[in-house]
Length: 294
Image (cartoon, rainbow, N blue to C red; front, side):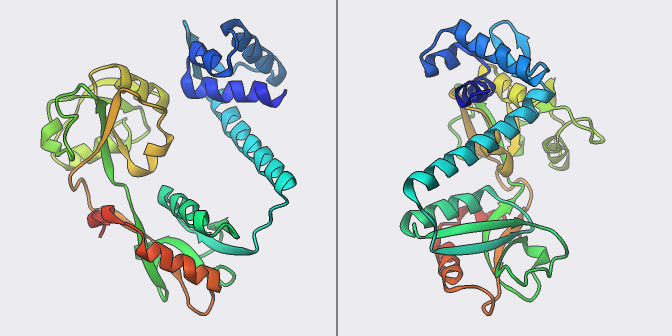
């Protein structure tokens, strides 16, 4: 099980198309198929559902994808450390009571001008006051007690995904009334309605979506939107997981529902000088989307 075969597997899950994978690795399509078959033999189970030239990851494939992604990232980090001998001189600790895609963007931007600084993230374990060793925390505003805080993101902002040729595709924002008569793609779910949470959001806004297609995976949802005339909905924390959609646009919903603020919290007596500098950087960063927060 070599790293090149694992990289071929990751790209196959991303593209779901052998032709594109072969072009990227500059090998033949039979070579891609052979590598995937060898990987399935080594793991002892099928990893894909095959539909003509398309390969859709099954449940085992999705699990394997997450482990392989993490493993190859670890290998890359290890290689960089060995070659560069790099060790951050300062580390900023953040207690993760919630998550946000924006915190990773802020850390990346900060490190571009502070390469000597590293970050350590600890997932939430224990109660909300367990911050004795972590001067910074990422929390929802409702859980901020005796701390100072800086808003960085809004939870559950809603976006519309549609083909670039759709009549509404040039809009900067979409109202629920604009999509009242559109056909939707939703992921099947265990909710009371049987669809993902964004379906319930439509009901709360007073419209009953026309469901044209129900699918079981996000891959199928985005593929259907990318190649058809249907539209879909996604929350802000889901957008980074969407596969490449060359034919689509992503447009924010206008005041969909008041989102909950996600804040970087801190206590002056507990954070390091590096932590204080990062807080100031976050405070001055552009947070245009926070107008939707409570």
